[in-house]
Image (cartoon, rainbow, N blue to C red):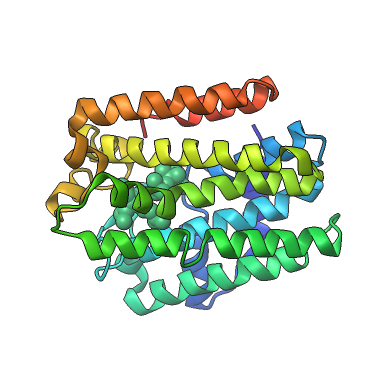
Length: 278
Ligand code: IPE
Ligand code: IPE
Ligand code: MG
Ligand code: MG
Ligand code: MG
């Protein structure tokens, strides 16, 4: 659901110009990602009474931030991964410098998109900008990625692993649910949605770690076994495969209890997200 709208809007937002910067941004942004984050924004907004027209640009802005994080995550100075979304990583095709800049462009541009998102009040736009900049910033995604890089080859404890997972993945997923609440003007639901988003996001990263250890490269469209090869602390390296699966199940049941009062369509989407095998 909503897939076509999301693909169309992403393609409209990045001009199809010849310069390598635009072609590089389009290469990564329009590659076949699962689009879970924009789908979550749209589903949350609409299930709380908001409109697709108002939610689509905020949803696209989050996918831009997510894609920039993947481009940078794959660079040789970070995870050094050559495959992403079933295609060679951006730096393998356009070079490291252009990949760095295409990521910077998507990051910067996402805030321009939010600042001029139609069908929203100025207050809503500022709220979106503040929410995303915090969730993607030093106490959110960048903070999590910094712990990840600093922890390579080290043994870290459960507390730091959770801080890393919440930072690098859960904060942005939680921002998707908050975005939906902001677009719909659903202030009363915002806090609980944000908490649910954190739990689901943490579960999502644990599942990502499990898939890295159990799936295949062809199926995932990214190199499996990469975490162990780089000596990364993960849910699997710390708890073992069964322990990680138990952790995932308990997070899921906690989040779904809180989701009880919300519409079935939102629950179904979140369930699907955690049943992913790619
Ligand atoms: C990958 O995210 C990185 C994580 C934060 C786990 P996704 O698994 O959602 O990647 P795409 O968007 O479908 O490529
Ligand atoms: C990535 O985590 C999180 C962000 C990009 C913010 P991973 O490094 O585990 O993601 P994959 O496995 O490369 O997709
Ligand atoms: Mg990484
Ligand atoms: Mg990675
Ligand atoms: Mg991973």
